[in-house]
Length: 342
Length: 122
View 1 (tube, each protein chain N blue to C red):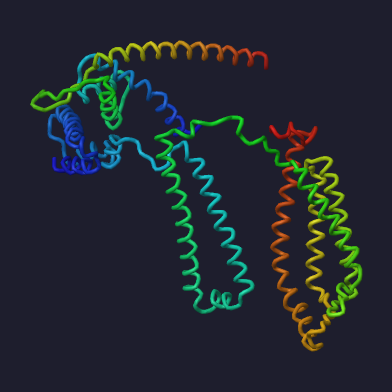
View 2 (view 1 turned 90 degrees about the vertical axis):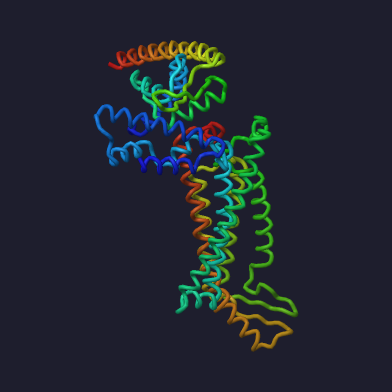
């Protein structure tokens, strides 16, 4: 019976103080009754192995005791979906800038790159991972603490029960193009075109008495390229203003225009476009050196940024096409309000 | 459906019925162990980890009374329905009978509907 006493002691440890004796007395009586009944059936005392089987069937002591405890939770089922949503947002807002900053340091900071790829890379990576995890735990811990407090407040006041259906957000249509964004796009495009045609048509883009900046003859391709793209985007913004829902065709058009724009930028940064900088306050040698640094160092450094932008914009554009096509498959008649309810 | 899902749904379905069964059985005074055995004999097996916390909860709600008494040279706790418990039991029983009758009607109607659809399909 020593096994039984050990079992009862283990269960007792987890029970609430006020009810310990009472619950243990009742539980012990129940097990004794079961043992006694089996012994009567068999006509002999139970072996230790048989008692062990009975105790195993009853379950692990902490689980047995747990059934007598009131149900407790840090964040209950009412607040849990909101907690999970906020936690995802917080971690995303923390992790994405962190990864971008880290990638930027690794690409542009030669000292940081050498430290993380050189002989001492293990400790450098270890300290980096340590700091990211520490900050992530602090962020997640803070959110959890705030929601635990809200849970207590909700249990006392039931503030979540007080709500107004009229305050719910309007029905969202992912394919809707806000008219305000089309108007902004139109205005910005027109201002850009006016400025571009007035000031950027010549390879000598700055021609002042104190400063002169000349570009190579290739500039005419970029001039016309960017101008055509701006006009295409103005036309697209005009159509979007009239028909404010993305269709597969218009989304594909946006993708093509973005790809063309990024390709132009990529080519621009690789083409040693700057020919001459002449300033009254700088000597010709220094100006030539400056031109060289811009063409050979600064411009190539912009290429990874253009690449990252290309990937992000490309993913967004492709996602928009897929979404627009999906909606038109479900509701071929249109992408209007009926599609919203889908 | 996986057996695990079925088991969860089955337990969910039985949970409310077990309270009614315990209240019904405790119209006669019994200790926990004999109550468990008698329920099992009637096809309503309930493990001790569920029964004893349930008995405590019902007692704290004033539906049961209990007393420790010696029987067969051992101290045992005997439970029985309180007067409030008897009233609640009557109400719950009526409620359960209503649910049972409604459910039978729904199952019967849906069954007919399904068979009509099947015939039309052929």
